[in-house]
Length: 436
Image (cartoon, rainbow, N blue to C red; front, side):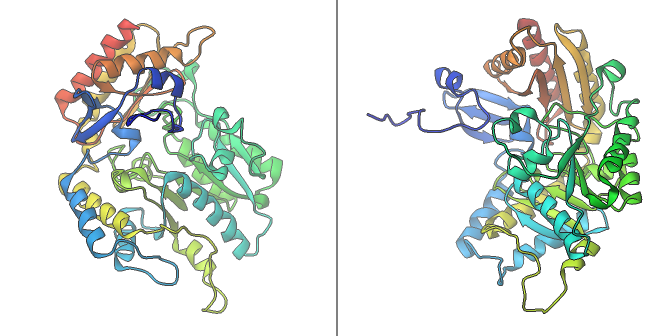
């Protein structure tokens, strides 16, 4: 007989499900920087949920906007009809993103944004008559969601191994992780611009005329905060421009203030042709994503008779009214509270606190940029990922939520974090590292 809180029916994503059911970690509510468990314990959120609750939990400005919108217009399609909020949000995003990105296509998640960006890239060249440009170049250890396009261009082995055959015409640059030259770098590592030069190898292999796009995260978040070396993104931009290849930035994590600038492209001074967004767009209150493209890309589709559909792609919930209301309220908070630059204000304390953990047991690297951080641990022989997972469980028991990827602890708190909460986060993590 099923009990009211039976934990068996939920097929959990990205979880050690059997272990979870033995010792559940159930979150009942949240406010500001903290979750509260079903047994009443406060948990400091060291990960902004999943890199996404940038404005903090349960902001009344956002929840009220959502509730008000649901009472007026709960749903409207954006296929052949539309509602005003979708246009309002598109214009707000146009004003926030780099000047060349003028058009917004709405999705429901980062995975959908990544796949949409890839489809736009291929379809753009098809519209331009360059139908042979189909190859999509991702990067090893890159994460672009879990739809088939994303795992094909992405480079995380466990996300790919059980789901083949994958999307054809994809290949990968090497990742930029280099412990030999760059361990314990503060901010961007000095060494590694040469990793970008591997694009020339792929261009020689396939021919520039066959490559549609290169897609990378400005900072690879989900595989452990891999910060791009000095000059790396600039070199990718240069090679793409020289060879007529589109550059796609997956800014699902780095967007909306994570680095202390509105977007990663602002931080690094490198502008893509297509930008994928999600997560912080609504501070995770309602699933929503967006893809920003240049006017040139958009206009390439605006051909032929005006009564015909120009781009055969979209979702039932593209530009959902409640999601648009949530996004507009979230952007208002970012601008009013100065959250898009707050990571710059807290950056020195964050960097120093993080690197002070270098003397803890098993730590083999520490990486940081903006309000992102990683503590890489030496794996236990014969039991990879267990040491970091033990740290995750111990931290939760001590009242702090961290995230692990492989044997790396990843940190990315809500942008509202206070200085004493940064101290608490790192003092707790120090205790955990000595305990495990």
